[in-house]
Length: 408
Image 1 (cartoon, rainbow, N blue to C red):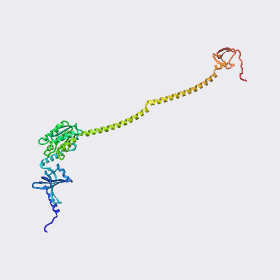
Image 2: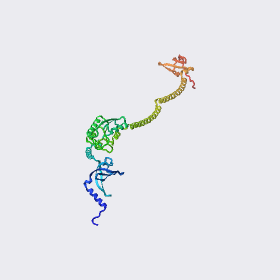
Image 3: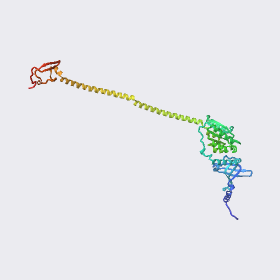
């Protein structure tokens, strides 16, 4: 056997290395029609690209799904950006997709990416510039077509959620030449009208249909608008520059209405619930207040000045009775002692003595009267005054004689 012999794996690895070293095959755009498209449960997408001359197998791994903005289906004309390599296990080559977009959108997509990068570097997508959406907006401005499905959806949801909210529509041109200028003017007009929040958007369509919302003038009008702006362009998978600049992105116009219009029924239910809680709390507070009032009333009744006055009156009456009894007792004792003293005085009274036959003799000497207690005080011929019970006797001493009454 002549020459070297290689294994199948070696040959497949060699071919894979050849593909890997080819710069063009590492980043290549391939255009074709989608066929045999399958979304695997793992998140990978397996499909084929075909044209009139051939077919190539393709795969987009789940980690690359961010490069796909629509759902793939049979027959779509697409442009796939990826790399071509060999799958060594079965020796077949396939295209590993990184980005997929519909055919005809390539130039617009490049413009979209360039403007997005430029505005992002300028900080127009930064969160610190996002204005909060008012929770209870009453005047809502809408910049969209007057005849599209978007305004009908917004009106239906608004009337269902809150019939008291006022919608102000600026009927803008949202597609074709002059659409960007019309949208910018609508934003300016509704801002001057003093709306609380603004919805800017339209229904779904191709990238060409939605391109007005990728214009720089529209992006700057949204960014500089003093009113919070909700973008609502296309379907959930559609993404525009307006979505990145707006204060809030809604996947659809219907979702924008849900975000902008507060639900009056829910609000009314909350008010009723707050009312029930308030009444319950008020009832509880009133009951506590009644209990405190009763307690204070009992304490007031006990501490009332009238009660204290009655008690003091009673004590005063008791003290008065006690004082009267003591005074009477003291007076009775004094009367008894007075009677004893009177009796003793009466026994010692000269008048009492005189009444019993005794007399009181008095003389005058040197102009002064003095009682005669002894015969030695009297001289014969001296005038004397004798006092008896009913009067005075003026006598003269004729004879003086000593006597020893009761003496031996």
